[in-house]
Amino acid sequence: MKKLTRYAPALLMMLIIFGFSATPSSGLPSFDAADFIIKKSAHMLGYALLALSYLRAFDGDISKWKLIWLLAILYAASDEFHQSFVAGRGATVMDVGIDAIGAGLGLLWAARRKKELTQSH
Image (cartoon, rainbow, N blue to C red; front, side, top):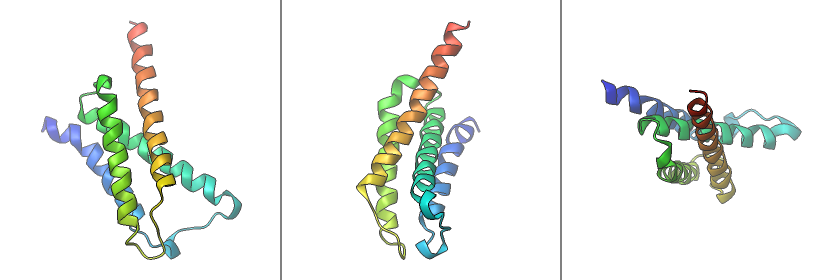
């Protein structure tokens, strides 16, 4: 049961990301001028949460940040590949980069949070 609680958030985030990626472009809302910023911010937030859920799977061991970041980037690349088969969608290296930035920011937040908690005790 402990393993399930460790890995379930990561699996759930991966399913959520996959679900959004499987949506054909005609089914996506458009936000006109803000479209780019909103969608790319969502990419970053989703991958920050994915990295944090991977961190949980590694028992919160922030020293494994390189592995966790690599796993998030590999999932981003596989997700972009998946999108290349979805009607009206495409795969871009830029999106993988944005996802990598989001994952990195999530891990930086976790490292700072851990440091703050350690210093306060």
